Length: 317
Ligand code: COA
Image (cartoon, rainbow, N blue to C red; front, side, top):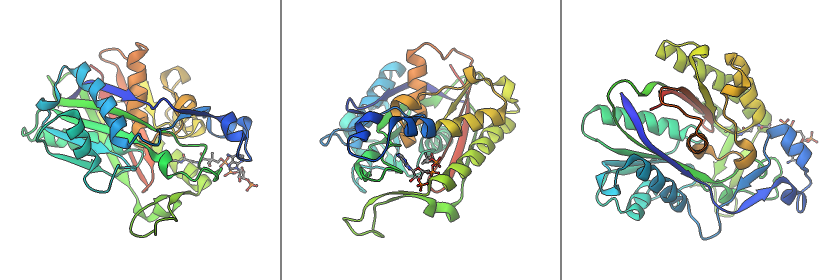
């Protein structure tokens, strides 16, 4: 079974509170908190790019794994806010880490990108051709934000999380995964940056209510499907680690599974929606706080633009 042998995360120092938004936008702390659960979000500085965040998270993950960058056999970065369209943020990150020659590529799967990357890495490790694979979920998505669009600007934040994966001894690791998507609903949430959009028109566009409805539905489905694939029930779960997009979506997912609140990890108040970084950011915080124990069954679940949704059930250790 494929295991996570080291995990790390990083959030930029720059931070915006809800009251910072009150100074230039028709909004208030009460609205943002009650609708989303968000209090703060970390913002990358103008000279800080996505790969810089990825490197900081990766260095921590490598340190914890006791693996040096030259030992990596592959680098996969999940992001919707790459430094450049090409080279990939994975190639830039690998070079900055000093990984030398190594296969490297990005995955574009929005918020569930980290879980998509876990699945891809697991499959490739299973071929026996790659021993250590670095998987990163990272975003500097606030660089695309229209700071005057109150429907989106208050929701997103920047951050990075990374994991070193390798084949384990069979007892601990990724027990089950589930990936799904439906491109027919892509127009409901978009980062309009690319050949379809002329420079100057770039931005994040979202139909909040429709996204909310779909997120509630698919987060629940994804969680239940990973449980089914692992032959487990919700009560076997020690931790639900949901994508941190909206506290009310998290709460609906918790209720669908019938889990008590103390089994759900929530840090949206501090980071906002960091898209592909949100799950590894949460896992890193749980490690730092001594919450994750060897043998814990951790169910990670996410939903995002595409639409894409995914889950992974991990026996921690
Ligand atoms: N401050 C104050 N008012 C705001 C606001 C803000 N930052 N943003 C929007 N509003 C207003 C709207 O303009 C609307 O006003 P109107 O009724 O006069 O048009 C009103 O608040 C209600 O908007 P509504 O969309 O019904 O609010 P909501 O309860 O759905 O909450 C979101 C809005 C965006 C928080 C919510 O829809 C959401 O979280 N959606 C999912 C987002 C998400 O998770 N995206 C990423 C998925 S990975």
